[in-house]
Image (cartoon, rainbow, N blue to C red; front, side, top):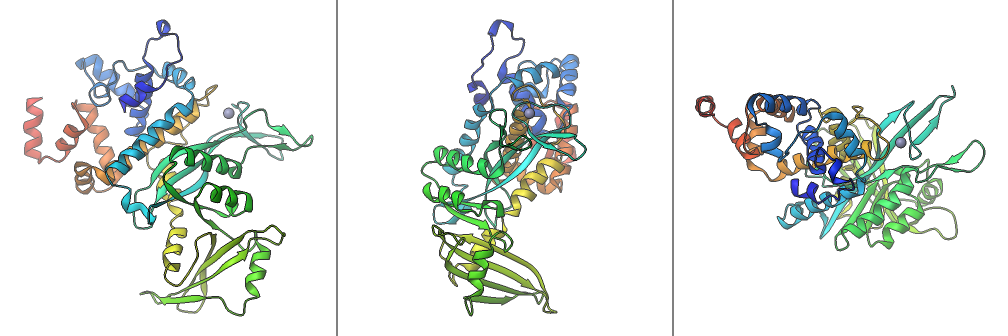
Length: 428
Ligand SMILES: [Zn+2]
C-alpha cells in the first residue's frame, strides 16, 4: 500500500507540511483496515511509552498525524488519484489467476452495480451535494456512489472496482423554479460503464443491475462498449413487454422440484421488444418463480439480457441474476454494519474528505476480501477465531499490547499454541 500512496501526487507546498501525504493516507487506511477509529490514538500512546508502534511496523507510517491535520490533508487529495490502487489490486488478482473462478461465461466477468449513500446531513453541504427538500421545508444533503463489484454465484467474496460518484457537477441545473435536474443513479451508471471500459479495455464484462437500469439508452451504452447485461425487468416498468409476452400461448419453460418440495419454474422468450416505440431494441426475457408445496407463488424474479436464453443456460442465468444481492449483502451491509463504520460521520470536509474516507474504507474491505481469497495464514486464523468479527476483535486487542514487525508475524502469533505465545512474549 505504501508504494501506492507514495505515488499519489502531493499538491501541497512541502515546506509547510508536518506530515507526509503518504503517512496521512496510510493512517486513515490503517483505521479502516483495523475498523477502529481510535487506532491512531492508541498507537500514538504506544509510541510515547515504547518509542515504536504498529502503525510504523505494519504500515510504514513515519509520523502519526493528529486527527485535525489528517482531515485537512485528506480533504485536499482529489479522489480520482486513488483509482489506480483499485486497478492494481485487480491486476494482481488476475496475474495470480484468482479471477478465473469468477468467469461467468468464458472470459467474461460479472460486475454488479448499485447505488449507495455514504454521507448525509441536514446542515453541512457543498455545491456537489445531492439534496432533497422535505414537506417541512427542511433539506437533506447527501453524497452517494454507484458502486460496482465483480462477483460469482459460487463465490462468497466480492471484488470491488472504483465507484462512480453520484453528485452534482456544477450547481444543479434549474429546470423550473421548483425543480432542479440533479445527478442520479442511471446517469452515474453510464459514466461508470465508460470508466470500466477505459480502465480494463481488454476485459469483457457482464453488467448486472436493478430495474432502474433496464432502459434503452443504458442498454445501448453497455452494448456499444462490447459488454453483456442482465437487468431486472418488472411488469410495472415494462407494461408493453409483458403484454407482448402474454400474447404467446405458451413460453418455453423448465420446472424443477427442490428438496424442500418447492417448484422452481423457469420461463423465457428471446427477441422481445423492450417497449412500444418504433425504435425499440429486442431483448431476451427470462423469469424465475418459486412455488411452495401448497401451490402458492412465493417469489417471482424477472430480467432482460442480450444473451440468448435456452434450456441449457436458463438456470445459470437465473443464478447470475439473483447473485446481484451480494453487492447489497456482502459489500454495502458489511461496510455499514460490520465494523467498518461507513456511515460513521467522518465529516464532509470542503472538497474530497467524505469521498476519500469512503474510498479508503472500500480499499480496506478489498484487502480483507483478497486475504480471504489468497492468504493461507488469514484463512487459518478465520477458522481458529470463528467469525470475521471475533478475529478482528482479537487483532485490535493484540496490537494494543504487542508490537509486530509485519502482518505475517502478527498472524503467526495468533496461530501459535498458548505455550508458544508465552515463549514469544517472553522474548519480546
Ligand atoms: Zn457535499
